[in-house]
Length: 304
Ligand code: KPL
Image (spheres, rainbow, N blue to C red):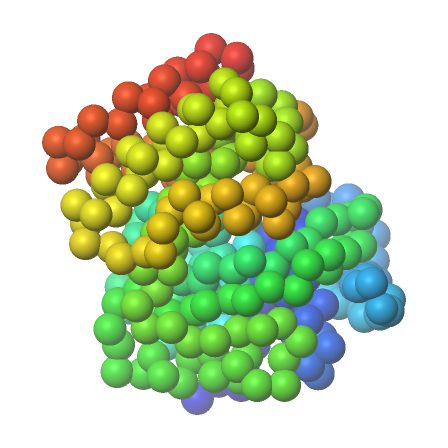
């Protein structure tokens, strides 16, 4: 039986938010960086800053690279982008214990299944979160919007009730266990499918999609197509139009994660969002022409 060794893959906003929140709980997570980033740090224990509207807290945390890990990993939280997640977990594979619990916090769908299939020995969980966080500087995270995170095991497993129990109580993030996690992943994917790609294409804030004009017309078409796919998959959701409009209004001033990626010239997670939906729709024989048009126009604008 190993002591719980918590490791976090990815030092972006979500990785830093979870690392700081675990430190706040009195745990000692270690942040795994890519070898090249790790080599840039002379000191391997660094300050990690967490700000909220009410307070600023600072924690000291160990950083490691896959090659510098010196203890077995039995709790791993994966906070990389969806397209990096599988390779990131593979990079630490030799350190994972057989009973390691892996929590995946990627946007979209597809990467979670690929990791669960690649690591059948380990207990793989997926999470869906509405927390809002951004990095003001490296290792300086602002928790801008307190949200809710649902976590649930991807496969049924006899030990899966134990895994992340420690995160459900006395934890500064609101985490609940939700066994039908795929339902939660679909609910978020459906909303992201309608909002994220459009905001990247029009380089606009979420609220600007409700313009009573071209953007809103396209938004409505995406909502209608997405709803048809959800219905065919028997995924029950409250009115998607109400949800999407509600998110556009509540986050009117936000730059969506995809629009931010596009502005920075980074690869987006759209292959795991609209791409995943398009593949499902294709298998079901449901036309999703507006999603396809969106992906084509994004590609033509150099946004991948
Ligand atoms: O999840 C989001 C994202 O930016 O990825 C939304 C809900 C669109 C909020 O910005």
